[in-house]
Image (cartoon, rainbow, N blue to C red; front, side):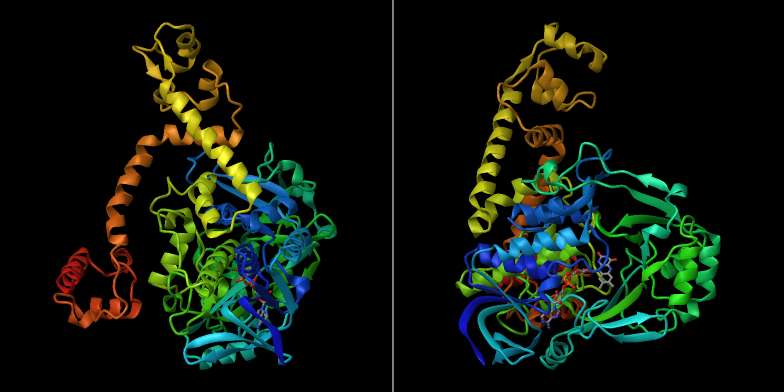
Length: 622
Ligand code: FAD
């Protein structure tokens, strides 16, 4: 049957990409359908019950700055919060939360169910309605035809999913869920650039059978951090400890002796796994000189005994998994509640996407999340949000939008994927961003909320809170620049201890804060502001003034690059006709079809000389 309504946007898949996509489209006012296998698994964390961490928290904060759900749901579900790299510079600081799996799902479902303009429907999407080179809708397993102006596909690890435990394998989207076979077959027919990847998960453990007394307790931070810019620590549920134990020589010996029974090593799995989230068999094999690896024992929730042993993801047969777990200190008598497994699935080469995340092959079809070769909830959520923005903008005949690499980790993520593709599951790191000092997790709101408001993603309460914070920061920075401390004044004497030598002349507070011995709280105590500055605003004043020199330098570099960024390359450009390019570079450019000169410059092997040739060619054509 034909469903009576025509939607603006249909999102397929209720994982992390799909839920952010559906919410974003609906927030923008688009009539949106979220079609998913199972409403009970909306927002399900397939693997580790944790959100954030290095590089990833930057994405979570960016999703939040654009009005998304992930950070808020984490604040409602987080049972342990920590700031990683707290002693290092602000660019690499990262908030990480252990989440109660059930509370997280509940929070996401609650947000979805209460979102205006959003309709939920439970059924598998088996087919796409395609006319010419345009997608017009979706057909479900039960034969319902939904039509829409734009379709966003976020099917995670489900397309052609095969689960491996030792030499046994079966079809599955993840443990307990069906795979997506009909849709995978259809996408293969449609001439999209398909490949295979794999990922894995550890066995889960019954806490009643674990001896925590021989493990190191790892408490959360006090005071408790929050994930969302709108979050409050009071929103967090009860907080609990995680635990640390280690693998040992015996564990590694067991793994080595059974490598021939690992589907990875026996050649049964063709897909490449995540380099930065390797299985324990990969770690033992790759780091043969190490006889111990850390294992973080993480609670899966407040109302369950299940534990997630982070660090021993495996697809070894169950009997070996049992021996491996029993070889680890504190888990000698542990009971495995669910075996670990690896999953292989279809993904599509993201070089087949525009920066909007629309496919180059089919108009009105967007891909987001694991389907694009990434791994991780945060990477998925961020892409879902972007794909939905552009799906809505297409439905309204508006130009697409993607943040630049100097504006957001989301910009880095998409640009990396679209320009370079990926041969292994891609995860975010701070090291992937060249402008780390500008792209901090603490300033994601200052970087993106105004844009989010313009795009229609940010609601009134968030906008009001943002404007108040932004204005307070600017006012306080201005006060710091115009407040002078005279030598031998009482204020200078108060600072003498910290400065170790007296002030030689008058200095503004904005100058003084640049000194390593001084910080904002010290200066605010000596020369207080009349305004009642929030902690978050004070942190911004401190970072922006203290690192002003470095920040300005990066801003200068970006300005230079931006000139290339705004030089667009015609999509029909015949690279064979550009004089002076090597055949290899012509080939690379013809395949990647970069949208701007700056994107062309980021393609590996495309030299600065080649960029000059392109510039000359473009000028000649004008
Ligand atoms: P998913 O969260 O997988 O969501 C896909 C959604 O689409 C599901 O709701 C599904 O039911 C629905 N769906 C699929 N096909 C259809 C269809 N045809 N019709 C309707 N609905 C459909 N990430 C890490 O960062 N580190 C790890 O170590 C890690 N290990 C993992 C191990 C395993 C075994 C698995 C399964 C995942 C692992 N992940 C890991 C990946 C993490 O789960 C994903 O990156 C993240 O969930 C991707 O989000 P997504 O929205 O793209 O897809």
